[in-house]
Image 1 (tube, rainbow, N blue to C red):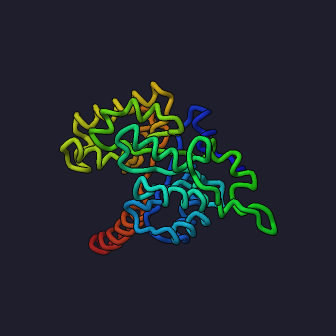
Image 2: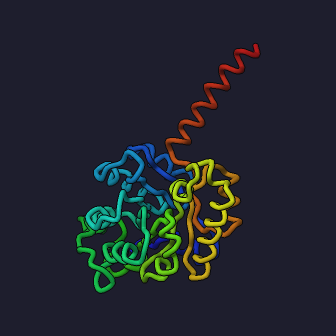
Image 3: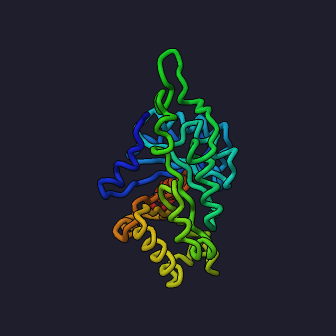
Length: 263
């Protein structure tokens, strides 16, 4: 089976730089996959991506050495199994609040005896030229190589963090900072600088480190990403493809207009 290099990066004590794709396009995903990210997450929760387009985006990523991840819309076995069968090497799942949620998530993502994932890895099957993606021995190593990553983003999840982190099969956790800020009664973005939010973020990270579970987080700038890595996060997501497009386009337009005004 194709190795999950995210785990190799973590084993070296380094941090993963993760890209984020919300635009439902294999072409924009292909462009992102060639920019040097360690992994790229396809966002099926808040992005405009449905399953069929997600498959083409996974195909675009798999033309490179970048590891494909997917944020699923919910803790639903149907989509979890289908997106893993399509070639995602890990799932980020929102709103995991307790051990029951975490166990349900793991069991849907793991083959027996660890879980009840149904066998049918369509993009790892044999074709006339060999395995399409992952490797013909995929099913022997999938439980070990694929990542199950619950999002921690509610007060309930914080209260139950120990039991979530000790759920067998959890490969990492991921902080949804905007939802966590809102759960703490703050503004989704501005609230991330609030002392209560920072304390919660640091407590989540501290507990993850205690249990040897890598922690990831979304960031909105180079400076914040570097700060989070220095703080101890082992996976940082940079701004998504749509935000890269918006910010660069705006910068170019304003640059032209400002130059014309100056002349």
